[in-house]
Image (cartoon, rainbow over all chains, first blue to last red; front, side):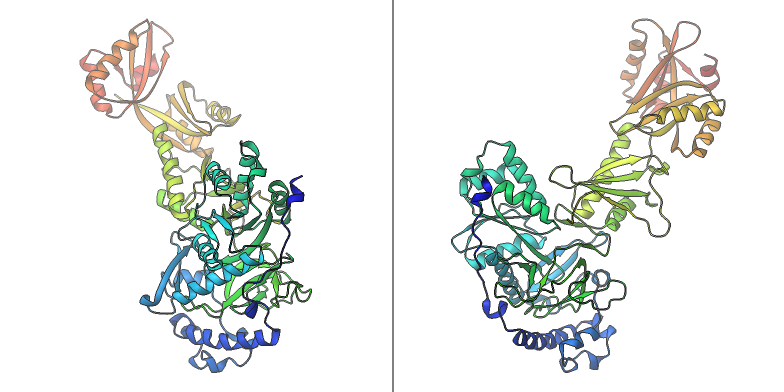
Length: 445
Length: 143
């Protein structure tokens, strides 16, 4: 049975000087870094408007509790200050730009200094090493390379460790498996749903699992469940590791699992984590579910204060982890406070669909987004109620309209989505805020 | 010399076509002819009825997406080669047929062809020049 071949888990630590710091030393370092972070943020007009000058200086921060007096930052704030209102340094100090989806047609741009890129690489190295990556390994990196932080973020993290990288990017399952067979990588990095797809392809194809050298996989970019982990671990005979991050804060490497797999270690020397009630914004005790709020402490290019991630999770309250790291640990992502969907690792907001539809018809038709995962991969259908302005007696024109709609959606979201035209007044109506999404996927155990 | 055609958006689901017919029946509107264009997912119903304004209003009131379009109707002999002869004159004119459908008249030995052309006026000219009988509404509904 494949199960018996699961690799032994070793407890390796990339930067023990930070990861295993004594709690009081860690908190002293956090305070010192928070003062600097506030100073950096004080250069941004957004924070100047939110706080009087005397409260936005390093001296105004005397303890970590003073963090609570600082304003929060939201995705909407980033959009309102498009494109680079939160850039913390001058343009010529920026070494990298990445992007993530915005709530409407435009992306959210994030900027990194050279130092930010180095820090990010080390943070990715931390969770990779924690999950078994070694210098002598070869890694098949099946995240898309581009504005998405997954590809280049992990690339630099692997390079930091010194392992070999196969930057194969995403897509083409047969080619992915051929690469796994021919180059014998020990490590796979992709979204969990793509791993399921690869597993299915492996099951159908001619490649013998025992001829592969795969031992570990790191999954990120979308929420997944313990059930999915068990399915992939048993099906492929590999260990699968969870990690978390978001472009606004950095990208992958914000937290990740260690050998004990009892939650994801926050990289607390570089970020301060809070879990708050999404309505009252009051802090919640460890163990309670709420919105994760993150303050990057050393980020120069994009110095946000108290960024509301909209991700729901909780902090474990069962004491320190036996692995030796002193950081607190967070749960899997259990949901969102907004209506953002993660489709095949890509963030999609219903408002983006609306933006796309407005390009076709100035009065956006009523629509509903249906998401399912029939096999391994997410499938999205947008149901759109026909309006007289969109209707034609010519089938060619109707097909063109459909193509135009899916083209406009692809342009805004980067995803190819099925378009289903339906009769007027057949989609459900809601009082108050419309519920635009039906998600049939099981994303939480 | 053009005829008003009503077209409707139709989901490709059981009962949807019947619902349209019921609405017309309740309003005492007779369907002279119809054509259905369909995909796996949706269809377009095209109808020729005498009281097209009444039909349009009734269907819109029932919540359908309705579109009215002028089409060209012409008669051909109801015998082998009848249609081919007519199409010869269309081909020569260079006008493109976007779609068409046909029905036979209740009396006589003629069939009626209904066309949507990309250039209807040029098509009518070409048909008339080759001696074809292009129908206006009264003569169509008399058929």
